[in-house]
Structures are given as C-alpha cells and as structure tokens.
Amino acid sequence: MKKAVSSLFFYSMVLSGIIFILYGYHLLLKKEIDIYRESIKKSDFYRIETIYNGHYLTEKIDLIEKNGKIYIHINDRKIPAYRIKSINSVNINAEVVKKVSRNGTMGIILAAVGGILIILSLILKDFI
Image (cartoon, rainbow, N blue to C red; front, top):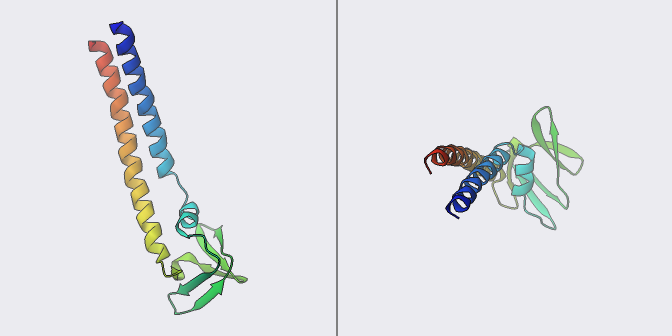
C-alpha cells in the first residue's frame, strides 16, 4: 500500500511538473497580435485617438501583421499600432506591455517550478 501511494505521489509530481512547464512555455510563446486582440475590448463603436491628435470613430477594427509590425486597419487606413494613443479611452499600448511582461514573468516562473518538481520527484524516488 505504501508503495502504491508513494508511486502515485511521484507520478503526480512529474505530471504536474510537465503541465507547469508546458503552460509556462505557452505563455512565453504568445504572439503580440493575439495580445492586442485580447486587450481591445468588444464594443459597438470604437473611438480611436492617435499620438498626433487624430480621432477616428469606427464600428470595426482589424489587426494586421506585416514585416513584424502590427497595423490597425480602420476605415480603409492602416495605422501602426505604436501610433495609437487610446482605444475607447484605454491606453492600448500600456495594456499590451503590461500583459507581455506578466506573461513573461509567469511563464518563466511556471517553467522553473515545473522543472523543480520533476527534479525533486526524481530525487525523492531514490530515497523513499
């Protein structure tokens, strides 16, 4: 009985370590355009302000990625995402930077914890 419980414990540590590692890498590999899509909240109308005091009102926003740059397609115009000041009074670039840094931090922490769990389970397997 003790062997079955300890075996179940070790395998659950290894499995949870693998899950932590995979989810950590998933967070690290998220594309920037997907983070922009998550940051732009769904709305009936979008009020967009650029850094050069340009104002746009539109019903639909499309995100396009060309040559590693992200463009926001508004009313048959392509505006680079770094020139957008706010969408519906939300600073979109600050939101994206916050999410990218959070994803990077959480991804690294989860991958490290997963690796430690796997190593710890292999060490404990020999002693118990």
